[in-house]
Length: 327
Image (cartoon, rainbow, N blue to C red):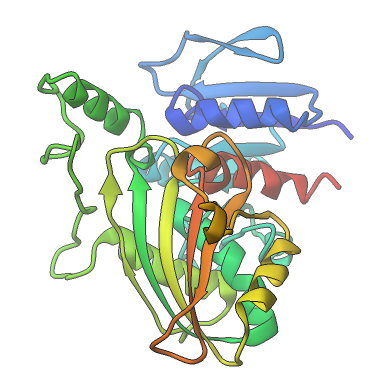
């Protein structure tokens, strides 16, 4: 089949990762178009051995495009996604703009691939931390049932885009950034995401709660989240406590997750084996380790979940959504 692709925000951190993933997964296409702001228009990007000139994003940019990957922020998605849909393009959007819209499916292919097929032109890519969590929660819920989930995240500064990474690298050199992404120092520090007006929870924490419930189709799932940014660039990690409806042994859980799609188990405390941020960096699987019983609750377990936030948490998940239509 002939296929035309567009990548919106192609010069950004996620956009560049998108190109890498598209190349690695060898998606066949007849035409590809790289789009970005006026400021980035004219730049040249190398893709599959050829150089392409980045075009300015405008209302005519989606003519003849079958699928458009959006990675340019919520404001751009709100402005241009509907324009793309009107041009006959299926939009796979990486921003938070459409995730909680009732008519827009929020998709993780290992978890709810059938939802993608119900789209009305826009498919939302979940938050990076949500993706790695639900990949693990889905098989556990299917076999044992979920009663409550408690999550603490350790999130790479790359989740804030190139400007966040630039601030970290500048500070690590002992310099003060000219245009810092965050009001607080990032290097050697831990910081929280922004707080919505009148809320005690951060935007990131609310996203994880609401998105997890939507993807899992569990609108009343008891889940509580604390999200923390840390001064790393490779991946996100999560400490997760899961209370199940049915009792399950560590061996049962480890075997179940080992045989579930998109998961790699690294779990042998006797040999000091567990996943780290560097283990997950530049890889597509969700890595799980430190699976152990919670001694305070008979049906609860603790585990450690790590995944590359730019790949599975963004670019790879988006490309996997597109692949659902290409099979």
